[in-house]
Length: 378
Image (tube, rainbow, N blue to C red; front, side, top):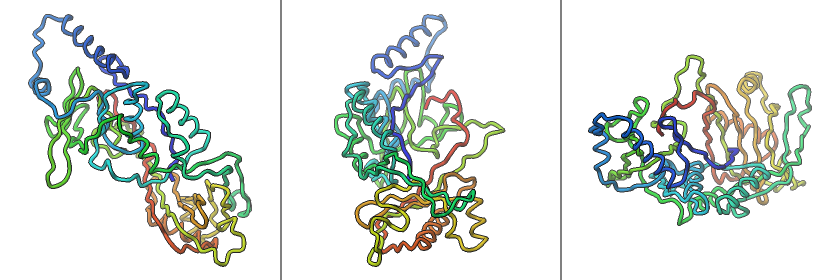
């Protein structure tokens, strides 16, 4: 389960010491003023380079203020906010060949944080992401830390702070409403070779007025799509090929959050107390179960102590519950299989009998690592 805050992305592009504000007029005026100042400051022939002339004289399949690459929660949130008629009203184009693919992860968040996001979206941008995007709500949150620091394994810590499970399908639909951003089902084909230099040659070109990028649709009838944008925002994730990272000697490689999750149905035919599933109360969301008493041999226990994982439990309707065994961060990463094995070992120890697995989730989140290199236009 990924803990998310979908908030406003404050994006600024610094070029020649000047930032761009997000209104169509200010973006245009900013570039125009800078170009005029540059031209008047010198009597030298300012004939553009051949590379820029290619971009300047070409007709494009698509033109926009902002091009957003990707279509996950971050991409759609940014595209939705920047194209909001109430606030920014920019012409935003979102590009991803997998735009129609359902989001696989499950999302959870503290209720008070969700309400802050809901209010911000509604008040500032006129976008409703309220109750229809909430799948389940718990008034309390439980944690188990027993087995360490002489804490009994039966001890439960309860937080009087409500937690919600986001309806990922409703949220995806809500950030895909008609009348906002436009969509092109294509991906970029560029690889960053240096700061603002890309391969293949000509696939991505920057100049003082914006950027020209070549996209490509997928399938047997794939086609090139040329796009002209004043700003490009890359939301394709940690493994992006468009953004270079800083190369400092003291930079550590990223750690990784790895998790295996399963939405399951459990057998309650012989259970007397149906207010709980094992030790997990149905009225509560269990945020952490870090107990290790389900490891019966010293080797497995030592392995778990060196690379700990915890159970995350979200009781849903009846005897359905979402379990997730999570490695919060490890370097190197724990394998998905290790998380899955620990999950079912824990459930067996707790006497929880799984009779059906409705869906599985494999969560991979890079944590930390070097920052993006400075002076990049993406």
